[in-house]
Amino acid sequence: MRQPVRSRLPTASGKTTFRLLMEKVVIIGTGCAGLTAALYTARANLQPLVLTGTQPGGLLTTTSIVENFPGFPEGVDGYELMTRMQKQAERFGARVKFGTVEAADFSRQPFVLTVDDEPIQTQTVIIATGASHRHLGLESEANLENKGVTYCATCDGALPMFRNQPLVVVGGGDSACEEALYLTRFGSVVHLIHRRDALRASKIMAERTLSTPKIKPIWDSVVTEVLDVKQDKVTGVRLKNLRSNAESVVDCAGMFVAIGHAPNTQLFKGAIEMDASGYIIPKRGTMANVPGVFVAGDCSDHVYRQAVTAAGMGCAAAIDAERYLAALNE
Ligand SMILES: Cc1cc2nc3c(=O)[nH]c(=O)nc-3n(C[C@H](O)[C@H](O)[C@H](O)COP(=O)(O)OP(=O)(O)OC[C@H]3O[C@@H](n4cnc5c(N)ncnc54)[C@H](O)[C@@H]3O)c2cc1C
Image: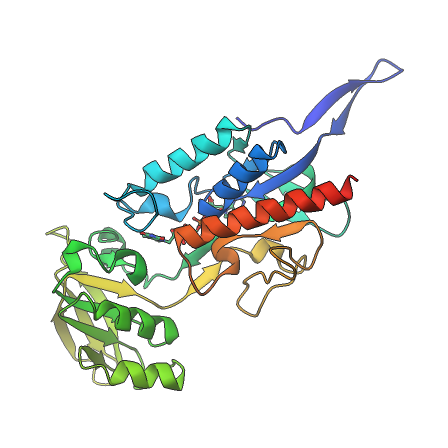
């Protein structure tokens, strides 16, 4: 159930009118960034309203084992980690509500967010809406996600299932090169599959990648199927050469898709400054170009994209918001 955002006020005439309640902080998103911001703002007695969007707990809930979040020497299930983060924030007074922000008006104070057709007024907003990775769009890819298909080498490359196994990276930009180079620490060989006949990556990155003996480029090719859905794990990829139309199969234990990310910031377009790819650029600390609007996590970070960096940015945004409110209300 959504928290009512209006209070009933009796008027002199006896009629009931509605008055919008004013929030001090609304946090958009409940991934690592949003929930850490919730914890810090809650502990600062700001009673943040935290909106889940369509993916409560964020991206990490889609992965079974997180091995690089500090404090969990045996690793931790992604869903469990996010449930714990939410409980921790709620313990100090954060109000986590299921709801998706549809529109944001940052042109005047208080800001107005439209959430499931209802307006919410707030003095500050922390945007922590994350980013979505691009998929190849294959049915077999979706069926084998987390069973050998992954979108993050830093997150998953060290898993036992990939050690000393042939691996595949799909893509040709800087990210794909970084993923391929990183995976050479674990895989027996890394096939880099690119739809063109040259990498799109920066010159230095392309040279480093192509001069690494463990990385074997496969040019002019696309993945048409991930094998093997019947075995419920990745055993290889079927490729099509775009010049010759010839088909081939490359054996591998994992497919790392690195064809780009898109920040979930479309709804703020025009309301706030972002770069050409849609990442929100903070101006001072974590504050965006509009005073009172703060940003944290993958929606403003196309470099690190890790749970712990998102959490760190959530902490920073919360402290910045708290200080901004203190100055505003002085
Ligand atoms: C399969 C997988 C495995 C991973 N494994 C690891 C790992 O092992 N270690 C690691 O460090 N990182 C890992 N990552 C990366 C990590 O998940 C992200 O870096 C992290 O989740 C980013 O946190 P975030 O809070 O910025 O965004 P997200 O986790 O993406 O959360 C975004 C939140 O915003 C909400 N939202 C979006 N739009 C709206 C809206 N309009 N209104 C309201 N809410 C909205 C969403 O519902 C969601 O709750 C993995 C990622 C994936 C996909």
